[in-house]
Amino acid sequence: MRNLPAYSQRRLRGFTLLELLIVIAIVAVLIALLLPAFQQARENARRVQCQNNLVQLGVALQHYNQTFSVLPPGCVNDVGPILADGQGYRIGWIAQILPFLGQDGLWHQVNFVNPDRSFMSLEQNASLNEAIVLWNQVQSGEITKEQAFEMQNGMNPTLSRQIGNGYDVTRGKPKPPDFAGTFASKTIALSLLQCPSNPRITSPISCYAGVHNSVEQPIDIDGDGLLYLNSSESLESVPDGASNTLLLGEHMNEPFGSVWIYGDRGTLRNMGDTNGLGSYTRIMSFDPATGEMEDTRNMTDEQRAEYKFLQNQRVGTFGSAHSLHVHFLLADGSVRGIRKTMSEEVLLKLASRKDGQLVSATEF
Image (cartoon, rainbow, N blue to C red):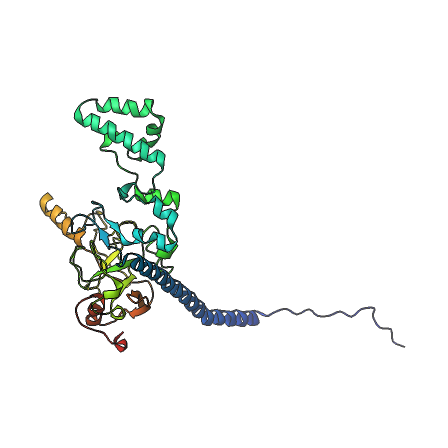
């Protein structure tokens, strides 16, 4: 009888190079097929979130309207037009609806007497008041700048800590800290003001703005939208009808404007613009080589000042980071995605509250 070996040797076989390349190719094809679907799903989620943000703002505006019988003014200020120079009172519509957004705590931090002092701590306010007193004494000649500085740096530890925040009387009139730093340090933000598809605008700038006027013009008391300077429009008496009039919309134009408590081009926009509902437009152009506004290097000081004044009057239009649509809130509370290629004639009709031109549902 033939003896058998205690064990049999097997020949181990792995993937050949060709088989490995085929597997890699199949995986790459699957990724190429699935990646657009994943990206589309993520964008759909961002689009839904953006629409939900507008719905929440719309509900808050409706509650404000039910409480006071009018919408909040788009901007509150003694005089117009509102320029993008940071001057004036300029409290905007978002700050006024904070309690109706469930943000009572944030609302109490807004200084409705002096908005520039909003979100400052008691210590910061006290320090600023003392610094202003010293500044006035310097201006009246009671003390010198050197004496004021010694008082800040030595006699008052609170003022000493705040010298680096603009309270140094030797460098000009003391002023509140920069809002950008205040917001960043305290994380004073409203997530519903941020469209998740828009990477260009970050807190504390709002991605959503009220409709000020149907064509480009400075923010003033004669806007034909529902939110303008010192406006007092009611949702119950929109001349063209609530379902035919836009109330809020997305924007992503630069410069973006001030933080959301103000009523400037950061929270108010016009509809008519040569760029239409584009994805992105730059309101004020800059020369990248110098950082100066274009076409100003050969101007006189007077011409440059006039040019900057005119540019600061520019408001800009609406736009979004979404591929096809810009989302708008209508006065009836509904949210619609309007195509970026929409006819300008239709857009102007929708933006104006009182032009008497109705728009059918099939037009947008």
